[in-house]
Length: 253
Image (cartoon, rainbow, N blue to C red; front, side):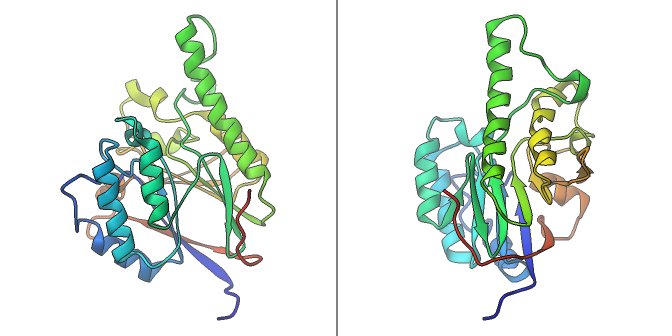
């Protein structure tokens, strides 16, 4: 097969697979296989972070998905403290799990982290006061630095950021204002614009908005499954964009 001109990227987040969810996502993954060349899963892959849930998802992937898949964890995936086991299960199913890592697929670069909260713009939380507040902000800074390191390793013309938490407020608009600081952080936006990322995908904000842009004009897509289902009723709940491709696939260390 010759070199393709574009790569069709499908993305979905917040699928929240349950222990009794066998067969629930078979049709979704089959449709994605038909419509795209790679799938991004942007966190909250499981509902309670249970090993049994991960096994259900792994079986759905191995039986219905026939294209490469890339994923990051969301907050739900950490709930029961089994993140390492879940990661191993999904990797055995062929999923490329990113956490401050980067990869190239058919000449398109992918950098992924979970991200964290902290708020946006002038209302972002600062590392001042109680030690617990400083730890909260430090976690956000660490996730931003991990994203920056992953992007720095890419040498591709097209760079895609895969997150769970949002880097901008625009794709969270529609959520209650009281929870806005817990939906993402502007600190994630800084490396995205510095490295001229081509597109950003995230989830987490189930009642947010489907699209926005960073200050540097990078398109940001909220692909939370509940949001896509509500916004595009009657259509499969995933987004697909096409980007130009570069060199053949390699994995960044």
